[in-house]
Image 1 (cartoon, rainbow, N blue to C red):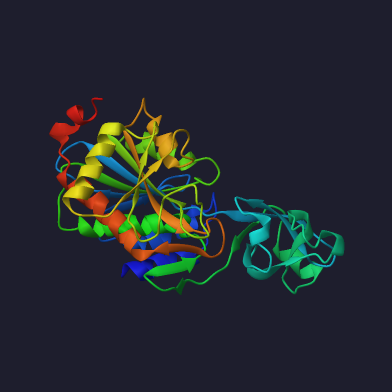
Image 2 (spheres, rainbow, N blue to C red; image 1 turned 90 degrees about the vertical axis):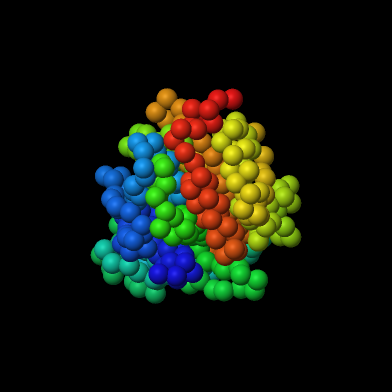
Amino acid sequence: MRNLEFLKSLCEAHAPSGRENWLYPIIKDGFKEFGDISISQLNNIYVHKMGNSQSKIMIMAHSDEVFLMVTYISKRGFIKFKTLGIDAKSLVNQQVVIHGKEDINGIIALKPNLKQQNKIKLENLYIDTGKDFDIINSLVNIGDYITLDKKMIELLNENVSCKAIDNRSSIAAMRVCAEELENVTPDLNVYFVCSCQEEVGHRGAGMASYDIKPDIGIAIDVTFDGGLMGDTDRENILSKGPVICVGPNVHPRVRERITEIAKKYNIPYQIEVEPGNTGTDAWDIQTSVGGIPTLLISIPIKYMHTSVEVVNLEDIRNTGILLARFIQELKTSELEGLFCF
């Protein structure tokens, strides 16, 4: 399976927090050549590649996406909803899928109200499916999931756009890493983890850490692009490589080591400073099982938590290659010294 095809299948699929099992067939198909695959009771997906020692390294990317939930069905068949992680302004005129007793297509419309024309608020949005109340009420329950519906498009300069680039791009980077290690037996056992429920509090990260008990944990996630139309307080740029995080959530010696690997193999990289909570799986990995030396590697994207997130394919590839070279050179015998401050 080619990596662009894999990324496309991941992003166009639907797997909100708590329903990551919907993504399992795609993950299983994409990673079946690279290790033993299993899924936990709460939807963490594990791919285990055997190493030469008892030591373990865990590479993690969350598989859930931001979503909506049904809260009310009007007598005219319109659906009201709550959101998780999505700004109401980005929802107007979007296509969605309501995951009821069967999948139902819908569009999000803005309630006409001249007094509110410059104030797009959640309470003024509703989903129109074209069906009347009796049909919708028979197929949809309060609490059913709703996800954005978008097909991937290719842009210029190796950029692509879709929904759920956060964080399916990182799963694609893990697959690049697994591909690079296919004919290599590393010293450490490698666990690739597609974690559950990151968007609602990094829950899968802690679960996986206790399941695996790794010597090193590396979270891969996305971060805000700092270019034109991005977060200008940051210096992350699409196509300039993976972003290595610096801060208390990251083990300094392990971070120095992966930076040295990037320089050794001429892999482009960027640096991002996070003085507090990184808001990623790395936060929960670090404090699990008595403390795990942790790294955070991020892929810059544009328009986060919208249906048109944008990522650069070379950033995905370079993230995977960097992780593979780091794993390939890491030896169990050096871990104790590496963890000393």
